[in-house]
Length: 319
Figure 1 (tube, one colour):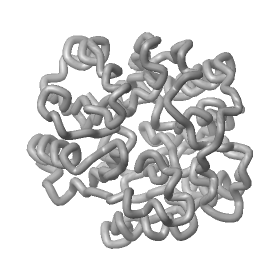
Figure 2 (cartoon, rainbow, N blue to C red):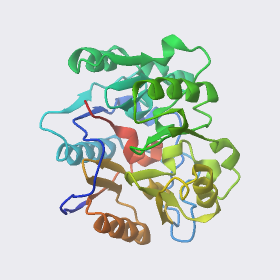
Figure 3 (tube, helix red, strand yellow):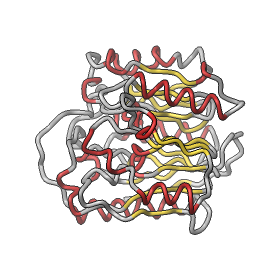
Figure 4 (cartoon, rainbow, N blue to C red):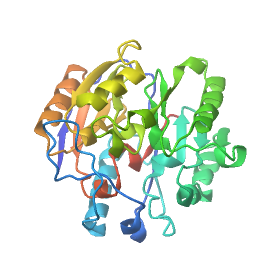
């Protein structure tokens, strides 16, 4: 089910996304590493939507239908023929989650050395060919070549247009964070080292459902340069404090459903999870209306059984 609201976008935005990169779902997707989301959980009382659970079965057909719908929605908000969908990698069940392979800001891209060793082959020649040959990018840095200790998953990296927040997690370490800080503070006049901010997610894991959060963006994303989606409850409170949300000039929209805190914003349009939590959807609708942002609710509930959130399935570039 997809529900769309369209409004006139007038809010100032620093970046315009001109290209999106995604990857098709492999047949091996059912063997993806792990999953934490349980869509049948009660979501309305606290930030308890992220749970570790046993495999209840993932439909490959339904997963592909939802992925196709996701891509069709994304295509509506980027230039024509600028969604690049890479072929599946059958030897890498998690390859759908292309977000983890890179961090991209304007004309600068870091290819990541992912925290789970089995996933590092997802940074393959097809990705490098798109970036360097098809798009002609010159500032492409490969962490796999430059660091034997640094690790980073793109899902731990949130660029709001003003700050680059980097979650320190099981998948992203301090060396990986420092690599990102060095690259992006060097290439962007509008970003200095202080704007690249580490968020110690490991120390938050005891709060509420924090132990089930795989990546930083599993728990927080932005809908514009000044507005963040953050879960309710103790975990969300501690996360907001760690990010210094108020001090840095952000407004936090607090949501009872953690999965709903992951949204994609592309050229003034928000793609949000079609969650069963009505309160979360209502608050997102209100926030988008107040900011003149378009809004589409996209159902990725089947993909979520394998850790997928909306941002996982694409990388947006401004080139």
